[in-house]
Each structure stands twice: as C-alpha cells, then as structure tokens.
Length: 575
Image (cartoon, rainbow, N blue to C red; front, top):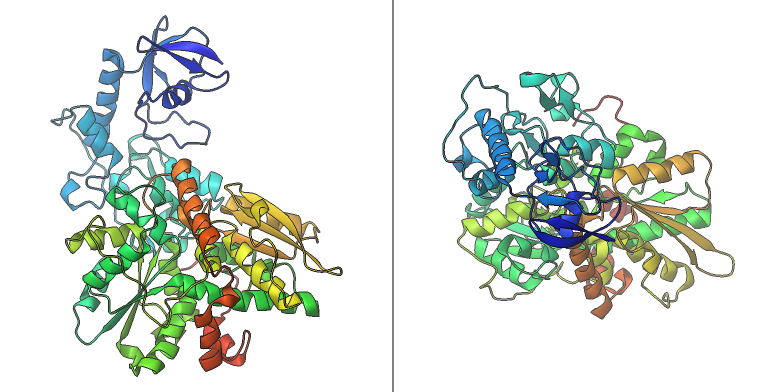
C-alpha cells in the first residue's frame, strides 16, 4: 500500500490497481458508462477521465494504474468539460423519447446528463435510424438507444461465451448487432438477459407481459394464479429502497392479492417437487448404470446453450421440467381438478428472476393439447412496475401467507435461488432415498459461494461416493463439460446455472452487477435455510400429499407425463 493524493486528499492505493479502484474504495465518485466491475477495463466511453498533475492530457481512471505520489483531480474543469461534451455527443444521436422509455428515471445516460447540467442540444446533424428487434420471445432490442459502451457485447462474449451480438460497421454507422443483422430469434442468444442487466440505457429490455397479465386480471372469466420463484422475495425489495437481501415474501403476497391475483403460490413448492423427481432420477442412474453425469435442467438459458453448443450431452440432462413448468403443469391439472375449475379458465402467471423463462414458457414441449403450462412470465423488474402501477408500496403492506395446495415449501426449495442450491437440495434427498437416513450435515459449504466452479465428494455409504460439480455462468459450464468430453469420470451430478451466482443474479433481477448486492441476496437465502424447521424436500407434507393423491411416486407414469420433457439438438438456431 502507498499514498496518492486525490482532490487534495490523501488516500491509500495498492500497487497494480487503477485510479478508479482506489477512488471507489475511498468513496470518491468517478462516473463510468462502459466499466464492468471485475472485468478488464476497455476505456471505451471516456466518462471516467481525470486530470493528473504533470501530465498534458486527461486519462481514463478505469484503465490508468496508480503510482506512488501521483496527484489526481477527478472533477477538474477540464475533466467536467470533457465528460459533458461526451454526453452531449451521445445525445446528438439519441432519441428524445425518455417519457416513453422503460428506463426513464433509471437510465445512466439520463442520470449523467442531469449531473453534468446538460440543458440544451448543442450538436445537430444526421441521425441513425434502426428497426426495433422484437423477434425474440424474451428480449427486445432498440439499437437507436445504444451508446456503443460495449457492455452487452463483453458480457455475452466473456461471461457467457455465447457471442450472439457484436460490433458491426465502423464510425458513424457503428452499432451492436447480430450475425447478418438477423433478429435475436435467429442468433445464438440463449435469452439469459445478462446483457439487459448491464445496458446503461433502454437499448435492451425484457419483452414485457404486463399488458397481457393486467388484461387477464381484469377479465371476470379468468382465474389468475401467480407463482413466484425462490429468489424474488429477497430481491424485489430493492426496487422500493428496502435493505438489500431483505426477505419480503409475506409483504409480496399481500401486494399480489391487492393487484388482483386470485391465488398466490410459491415456486419453492415445485422446486421441492423437482428435487423429488431429479433426485430419484439420479439414484436410478447410479444404481442401474445409467448415463452419467446427470446434469440439472432448471435453467432454460443453459438448456438452449446445451442444445446449440453441446448436443452430445442431451442424454445426460435431466428430463425434469423446471420448477416453473412443473408448477404450471400441476396448477392446470391437480389444482384445477381439486377446485373444480375448467383449466382453460386458468391464467397462470410466473414471477421469475429470469428473462429466459419467457422463452421456456413458449417452448412447444410445454403445451399439452395446445394449452401451455404457463401463460405469462413477469420478471422481478416487471413485478415492481405492476406494484407501482396499482398504487401500492411494499413499505405499507400487510404480511400474508401463500395459498394451498402449493403454499408449503422446505428451505431446500428456497435455496434453489442461488448457485449450488439445486445441488445441495438434491443431495439431501438423494442421500435419504439411497440410505433411508438423513444427511448429518445438510449444509454443503464446499459448493456455496460466488466461485464459478465448485466441486465436492459426497460419501453416501461404504460402497458409494458421489462426485458433484456446480457451474454458474456459461463460460464455467464449458469448463466442466469440456473436462467430461476429455474423459473425466469422477463427476456423477452437475448443476448448471446460466447466470453467475445463480437466479439471485438473473437477467430479470434489479439492474446492475454489484457483487456485494448479489452476496447479500445469497446470504439471505442461506439464513432462511439455516433457521427453517423443514430443510429437506422429501419432508414437505404438501409434496407427500400430491404424490399420495395424484402423482403416485417419483418417476411414475403420471409424473413423467406431467413433470418431464425432452430436448433436441438445434442444428439451426431458431427460437
């Protein structure tokens, strides 16, 4: 450590770090548009330029290394003028439709224009015109709002290794687009939404289902049912200024009923159902010498990625539907039957942390006799908009429980929201299925945390040890799959989550990529697990009941019809 001077104030800096990193640690604000925490700086936007005493020009703080004794001015007159000019030039080719933009009030370009005092248009000239790309079932692109920061391109390439988008053309005609300028539906996009989360403007957004959901709620002929994913309750509060990671499940239930949902269920119930089927599938494959390693199938972005890039692993992937789709299936069968409701009158809405869930809901494999399991998907962000649209606020809302028969969950179903959670839940139940006993220590701490790849060995009995691996982020999934292709054979079960950190960092969650926020969400889910009385999926009484009354047993013919599906190689990349 050594000292540097910033704005006439001494701060500590570390050898090898940048000016931006040192200033951030000292709570000194420097604006950025292209910077992504934890990734190599690109220096593309030049919003972070600062002045260093003794140097002639401004330098980018995100890419400039600190030197002992350097003197920095972060908000000198030159730096402010340069930043303001950069913003004004970006606005010169930007549409003036802020009132209609989904990011109005939450746009980094808009925020910087306000902070820098941009009050009039100083630059005029020819404007680029682009078509809106709404071809994807999950993500909409508006290239006219793109400021060429490159964040979406870098996340797609460096974090997810999908390469669905890239810089196209040069100079004034430069833009971000797909191969051959086709729609996203014809690209390699897996709809994970990580590009949406880092986009500073409204150039990328989820494809909204709010209109359809509100129309269904106001239709007296419809029974509108909501399910919400395990991670939603520890993230939705951030949209209302509540503490990061605060669990607001009861408050959210109250809000959903006041919006007009007739029933509110928890997807953590169907996460338990998924575990019963998936754990049974693992046990069967281990005992009978079936195809190993078994790979989880809960993450729809990962499934499309596998169908496109690793079709050789289709037989390895669990045939279980995701918790969203399992819940949709039992709502329109078991629930409809118990309540005496015509399934065609049920409008099933899932509230998910994931943009790819919109794609998953539209997969033809998930429709029986033309009736989809899920009718609409709302992201966490969309739910926040719906709550505000109805004049509600989570600060002033009664706490309410879930509805039956899908309101009871184990904490194993709740930790599905974080990387390693599916694996941990499955191991707890698979161990019980094999031995008839409970795992002494249900916490598998070796597969918890933010690391991209985590592994563990589970001693089941004297004859059997199961190797497990967890990958979050598709780049890390590649690492594990490539090892398996090269002959590695000590892994029996693999969990893959498309998004780094799991669903708590999903493409539909509150915007930004702050690791501390993601860790707070993860901590909240593990706290729920630690303090819960029911910590194993097979101990959920409502799960036992649905098998007794309807599904018979895991992997039965009835459960295969409703809860399992198939996948196929995507030789041509289509939706």
